[in-house]
Length: 142
Length: 200
Image (cartoon, rainbow over all chains, first blue to last red):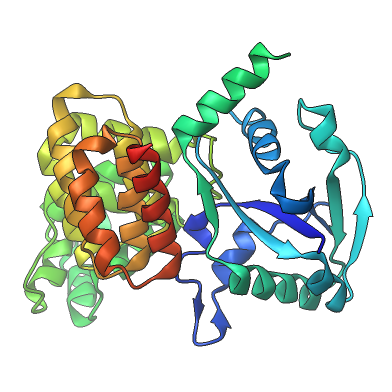
């Protein structure tokens, strides 16, 4: 089953889903760009997960923990959200090819996606030390 | 400030039942950010804040709390992203570096009384763990460990992340204990991930 990963900041997601209702604060973590949201396609078995995390972490001001949520592509399509393959902008070209834009032209679709992500939580975390190690190895391996 | 010293105006203030949060919200809208700390200080001196204190609140805000309040209320709508530093991060680190243990106690009191918005409060806990200041390190560690027991999941999460930036091995026992009683799945996952990383 195809899966999609999105980087999140738990500060907006912890205890956001209560009794089926979702706090609007999650929308702070789902800011659209030209009506799209950035995701990455996971390989079967999540083989490229760490590589995606290290590539995204390398794009930040400083190396930090990486929190993410994984959702099923099938569930996204059920929400009638289009998935487009567009090049990512990380330093890793292989990771960039797995970038996906999810088209969310309406608030309803955005909220639907937010609910889907919250239900698929809790997020997973790659701790800062592991990110530092991974990025260092990535740089050493070119 | 002249208006506040005017007896008639003070009477108007006294006639209302403003709480500290309302006063802060007004000031944050009306006063430039750089002037807020001194405005709060003057208000305290000129007794406007005493209206709040005299209104039956058992825990009046201390001057240090009053200095921290505007910082958190102005950060209410700030967007926080992992791996990116904001001016709020710098201000929190400065406040803790200069105020030491007293500043941590003031922040704890504000969190306990729910006088500051939770998202910036959570972010502040991350900053407190990540900041480099050996002089306050022991106090910061103790502060974060204590907040692992806080009633609000977001505060427990912030304390967990704060500890992840410190010598987390020292906090391992507290984290193991905290995860065993944690009932929020998102916080529990964060704690478990940190414990696994420490145990490596």
